[in-house]
Structure formats: structure tokens, C-alpha cells
Image (cartoon, rainbow, N blue to C red; front, top):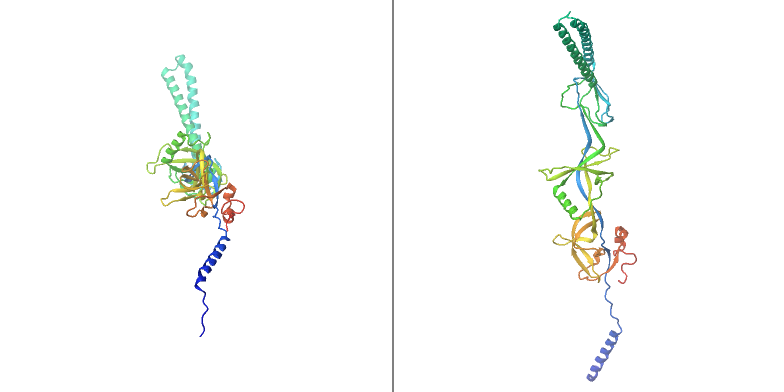
Length: 408
């Protein structure tokens, strides 16, 4: 029978002490891990700057001048002397109405005038003969008075005949239908051989002047009241003494290059819509704008001399729908501010409350701010870096150099 060799019981405490000492020695040789440094973020310091306030309003284009061409005499159309959709000049002939009956009326009026002039000559000679005879009492005063009256009547007949000749000339000229303005022609409602009337309601065609062209937009009266208050308080200043500038955005979202000027605003508010019509005039040399087009017009309302602009990427919304932004304090601590945004200016918001000049707003690296992050390492971001798409992809902190220095 074999017996196991067991450690003596008096040696067990000694072995435990040796193991504890060895573990303590091993623990004393390991260094403690350093705390994580604060995350780097890109900030922009807010500075007041002049901001031009613009309003984007929908509108329609309207021809600068419109002329509905109607016949002024009745007759048959012999010729159409223009190309539909083409350009015409003021005074250019558009139609030719049959002039034959009007030429005959002119000749008849001229003959009546010649007859009246001959009668006047005879009456004048009779008066000249009667005058000395009347003074010699060879002719009665009554016969002389009748001769004078006949002369005056003949003179009136001559004047009436001259008026008839002038009327015949005018009617003959009206057979040549002329364009009253320069512009572009529309569709013709008649062709050769059509009978037209002097008082017809249907226009033969329409000529529209397209250069320049009007753009009519509507603006709520409440906006006009707000602008008046802001101008009166000095919050806004007028752009200048000249007319307000206006820009257009076409239906396909492309900008229209030539700028226009606000010409006038209606003096009455539409009772149905509560809005006021504004009219601007734009140059249109290439006839890109056609009457009836839907456009967006940007009007310069004024200038905010102390405007604060915050990048849209720095603004989010809380559960209540309020706009918020993250601000870095003087000790690099982060706080959330509820701000009041007025309007979008490009890729920025015009802010009227919640932040002030000198505040540092976080614009890059918001995704690094996890729960419990109190302090950050802010770095100023230039506008060029902020607008660069490559910054967000390669350097979340929005700065040059390694963004993750000190991190493993």
C-alpha cells in the first residue's frame, strides 16, 4: 500500500504569503491607462456683418406692351403681309383690305369739293358786282344781302366737301392695317378673302412687346407691415436711393442672368387674398421670357447691418421643434442653445436670438459629441474648409492635420 506525500499543514500559510507577494509585485509593475482627451471639433466664431435681406416670391411674366389689332373699316382682306410669330416694327403694314370702294369714295368727295369751290367762285363774283351797284342804288339792298348769304353758304359747302375728302383719305389709309407698336406677332385670326367689320370684337392679331418685360408678383400685406416696422426701427436700411434690384429664377430652377428693377407696388390690397401686387421690369433681349411664364422673383428688401449668420449644418431641432445649436464656451465646455432663425441666406441661417457676436458655434464634428461629453478641443474652421466636401469625409474635425491625435 502506497502512501501519498502531503505538505505539512504548518507550511500552507507560508506559501499563501509568497503567492500574495508575487501578485503584488506583478501588479506594481503595470502602469495605469491615461484618460481620453476631449474630442476635437470645428467651430466658427460669429461676427456681425451686413446682410442683404431678399424675398423669394412667385410671379408671372407680362408683356411690356400689348396691342390688339382690329380693322377700322369694313371690307375684304386681300393680303396678309407678316409672318406669324415674327418681329414687326411700329407702322409696318400687316393686312391689306380691298381699297377699291374707298378709292371711289375719295374720288367722289374730290368731285363734290370741286363743285362746291366752283359755286363759291360764282357767289364771290356776284357779290363783287352787286357791291358798287348797291352803293349807287342800282341794286336793292335785299338782292345784295342774298348774294352775300349765298357766298357764305358756298364757302361752308367747300369746307364740308374738304372734310369729306379728308375722311375718304383716312378711310382709304385704314385699308392698310398697320402695327401700332414694335414687337412679336401672334396668330392671325383671319386669312385672305375674309370679310372684316370696322366694329368687330375679335382682333385680327395681337402684337406684344417683349423687351423689356414685366414680372408681376404678389406679396402678403403682413410682410409689408413688418418691413415698414423694421425700416422705422433702424433694423433694416434701404439698399439705396435707386429702385430695388430684383432677380429671377426660371421654371427649370436656372437663374435668369439680367437683373431687373422694382417699378411700383399697387396702392390697394386685394380683399380676396390679402396681398399686394408688385411689378418689376427686366431686360429681355433674347426673348427668353415669354408672357405667362411662371417664375420666382428675388427682391432686395433692405440691409441688416448687424446680421448674424449660422451655417445650416450647425443647426438641428429638438423634440419640441425648436432650432438648436451647440456653442463652445470660454472654458471649452459645450452648451446647447435654442435659437431663433429668421430666414435662409444661401447655406446659412439669419439668426435673431439665442446666440450673440463672439460665440463659437460647432459646425464640424457634431457626431463626436456623445452622451456625457462636456468639454471639447475646438479648432477654428475657415469658410473654405467649411464649404469643402472633402473635409467631412477625410477630417471630421474640419481642420488640417490629424484629427484623431491622441486617440487609439
